[in-house]
Length: 102
Image (tube, rainbow, N blue to C red; front, side, top):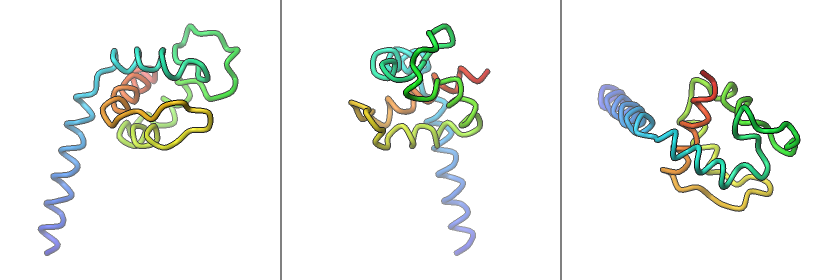
């Protein structure tokens, strides 16, 4: 039974890694600029005047090793957030944010 549980956990991890690598940072950037920029600094060159929410570079450092957790957090309601991204959109935005940590 433990063997089956371990095998299942490995399969879930592999599937999660495959879906995370399928995320599109360019699509995530476009979504971030249209949906997240009113509150967040979504690009390094953006003005620092948007202090209502943490800049994406800071979020990138916080979730650097775990884009799946970041995508999960993006799907949770945010204060003042006017949209709920689909799972695919959340993965794309997470991939874009991850790219800022490089």
